[in-house]
Image (cartoon, rainbow, N blue to C red; front, top):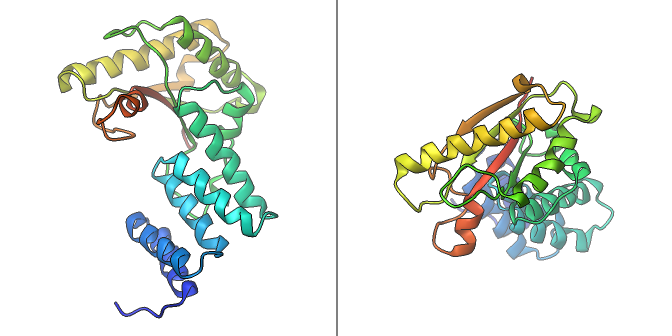
Length: 235
């Protein structure tokens, strides 16, 4: 395809591909637009949106920050950057507050260029379990206290959430699938028993090692893959 060497043209191609959920293609066009015009804020914001959809909060942060260097008053980009920072902090195992959990779960899909890309807002947490077990560690219980307070708050009243369990690729796939189920069930039970949360407002899903957040090639990546995700379900 013979495209003009015009950043705006590539941006429009990218935006169209993004709306069609052709994210790899959209990313390549956004990148081309930023190569042709290194001050093109909208293209960097588009990249940030793509990275968020693909679950790469770290890359999204860098893209939003780059674009905001050129148009620092862009409120949508600043809000997206805040969300990316919370998600990156959470998936990296750092503590988040109940207010930050609520902030992500109140994320409006209408504000995103990638409308409908996910069923609802999603947050990854590195919930720590004892080795090869579904028993929560003391650190995990502290992490879940933040989630529990958020879920019983008036801000999320009446909402339903899916708790999904994931593992790294260490071990047999069959055991990983079973372990992810047990861990999701344990998280649901802990929240239902210790907080004012209706059990039927929480459902579980489990995927074992079939949906890695990162390649299982390093210790850090495997830690990212041993996770529990919370997703607000559309009603």
